[in-house]
Length: 332
Image (cartoon, helix red, strand yellow):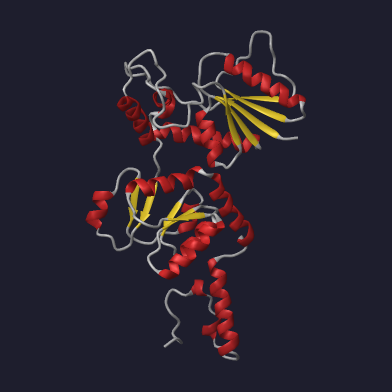
């Protein structure tokens, strides 16, 4: 028996509901457990919730008006359907995460449910979309016009998509010790924060979808142990060797050759868009999950004491690194 979550999020017609109900009944008949997350939980007149199916309301936020202009393509449809404000998207994603924690789906079936699809992708939950060509636009950019009887320019279609992309853009933390503070102020934005001193990685990595570095062994190890894929631009041969190994694992990509905005953007989008990279990082974590950077320090300390300091039983050698606020007095 598998657990299936079927989501309906956008669209007014009850054809979405009818399709979801038929799928749910078919899955239950085959022995699976089904949770329905519906935009409208009102069932057709005289119909009750079929046995074996749990019905919950889909997470929604207030929708914006069209602003007086008709939607040109699916990007515009999303913009006026709750994707115009990043805070609204984040709120729905948080609610969908709660839904996933409750239903624990092994697969998501989305009937015009774009936020649910995004949540499933972030959670590495297998997912598929059902519906017609309106709710599942072709994989082209920009998305084509949904008003073929009108003359909609290519520029208008591209503008609609670019406007949507600005709302779903990434939150980036750039750690740049030594960067000129004035330059950092000029570069920083609401979505790009710049830290001028080292930061603790573990709390950040649990929310990260991608990490970018230059191939340092310490940073790369912590990133992979957090199941996060890597983009790497090495500066020295030692870093290049490690970056090639990460790439061979399938857990990252080496940013080689000429660096420009378009090529880097394409590489980062591939890392974010292909689950295989995250799966490879997860496999690394599964193999080496018991490792922590402190282990290497502890093992080195033990080796030093056994090999070179045997019998040197002063109080100084018994202090743990965590208890020392400054180098021990005995190390002159």
